[in-house]
Image (cartoon, rainbow, N blue to C red):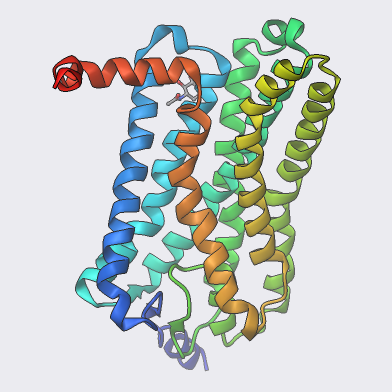
Length: 320
Ligand SMILES: *[C@@H]1O[C@H](CO)[C@@H](O)[C@H](O)[C@H]1NC(C)=O
């Protein structure tokens, strides 16, 4: 009996990630697109991290959070995209059992960190816009360190439970995952053990990553919008709103798609939609975040321009 269990448990030694295999004629185009996305994401985020760390006058709370966000995006995309690129190039879609669970853990961990970090950043904007006179007093360096380390700690701890739970399940085949990375829901569907308990615990842990930051973020933005509406001059309103409108869009897309994938019922008709939503928060958001959060910022723009004019002799090019 015990032996049979072991045999059953080890029956699945690898999973097949179908990914975008359903569109064979698009493989080459998709490879080029994903490669470009990965390169842009890495370069953009590395640039921002380097700027934050090397410029002394950017050693302020907001920029620390931006730096942390960029480091996070580098880690986050690197758990998903390289694997997709390799399977596009090699045509091999398998992922080992342990590889799958590693991806499950790191993806969960970085996604959870991102949820909390985005909410910390919206809190920072809330203090800056709604309590500008107390900003320096509130955002002391100790609080700042706590606020930027808490997301990493929560992100490391919470998904550890869900990953452990998922790794206790039995998989006796089939082993084909209709998704482009190892995610909880598609993995649970393949298990041959009773998954009800695991599913319940996972939705509790999943919502503990999504709900508190979501509530904090939206409360912050509601306060921010109320404060902006009270600004008497229209140009003042526009200026204040332009600094946070793009954040609001990113945050809405990120939490919106994440919530839809994890909270909506997992039906056949929704599955392809889920894949597209997953693309948004796994691949597109990390690419756009550095541009939206940092490069729209005046101080950042100036530094980037300076860096590039040192690398490329701009004046000569402009003179042509
Ligand atoms: C992340 O935040 C901490 C604490 O605020 C800061 O010391 C560190 O430099 C930040 N990391 C980056 C890459 O900006």
